[in-house]
Amino acid sequence: MGPASSGIAVVLVANAPDRAAALAQSLEAADDRFAVESVGECETASRILRETAVDCLVTVGALDDDDTGASCIAAVRDAHPALPIVWCPDETVDGDALSAAVDAGATEVARPCGDRDLTPVLANRLDTVVGAARAAAEAERQQDRLDEFTSGVSHDLRSPLNVAQGRLALAQSEDDIGHVDDAAAAVDRTLELIEDLLTLAKQGSRPEVFEPIDLSALAEQCWANVATGEATLVVDSDRRVLGHSSRLKQLLENLFRNAIDHAGPESTVVVGDIEPMYTTTRAESNLPTGFYVEDDGPGIPAADREAVFEVGYTTHDDGTGFGLNIVNGVADAHGWNVAVSESADGGARFEITGVESGD
Image (tube, rainbow, N blue to C red; front, side, top):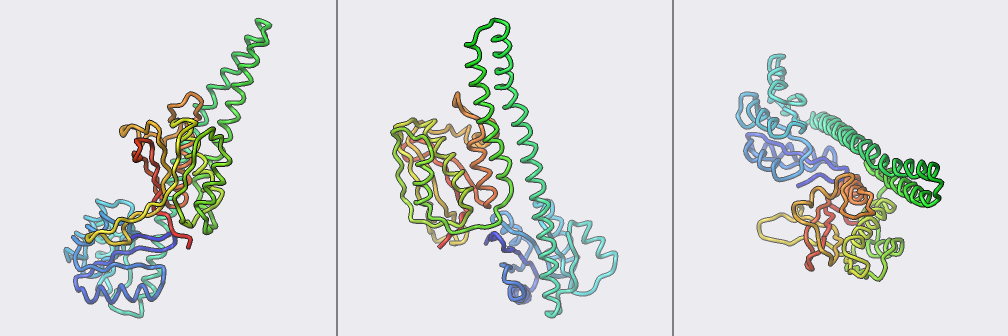
């Protein structure tokens, strides 16, 4: 179980399994965005929270019950500080019980859950607390991106501008026009950095409109937009993905440039589908799907695979250090995950997962 882009994934724990299942069914009927998994004990709920993306926990029962009350709420809060937790008591409670639930870590205390007629009220309360949690997470993410962005601006723009300034001073003092060429190259470098920084700045916002995109056709179009030399593109995909076309172009073009820069102008770059590998122990909804871009170059050492997405990271003399960070930003804005591993030929393999089908 995991939340869709507009869905709300809920784990509901109640000490009576039949009651939990009935309330889960009632919540899903009240609002079709809800996907509710009902369990009978806190330990099971905690395991699901560790293994699966969940938007909210609902506990139903007495505050002194280990599986639905203060001890369960406190244990979950310790493990998941930002998760919305709603306690639904069996009956109307006094102020002391409300305070105890909040002190344990409950985000909200709902009206008693014994009355089915109150299910729409509970559904509205869950929608509110999940919306607030998502807004807070987005604000924190945007602040992190702003801090990262301003750090990149101050560091990476200063260097070529200092070069240009120094060369122009030498040209004036020595009356040597050769320094002007170096100054012009530094200015060109600055303009390149500014373009990448502007692209980076807008990647944090989630696109308002998603559309079905033919991945194969878009990959071919992006390949034509990149200086690829004698490199070869192989597209092994018939997938249509749900995304924002211009943002996905930026992701693919940056991955193609990265491949050419590091694997060379005669490399082979492959775009293909990531299909789930079904087993008897994993549920289909938990299996990653998406696409990959890989090359046959020297690859990326395992120790560097997380750092490559950081602002300013580059091993190429002419690199801006923003290309893969832009890739990560595009994926993040879509709600996708991006990771790097080794291709079958020993090169770099970038996997983009969590991608919804556009069929």
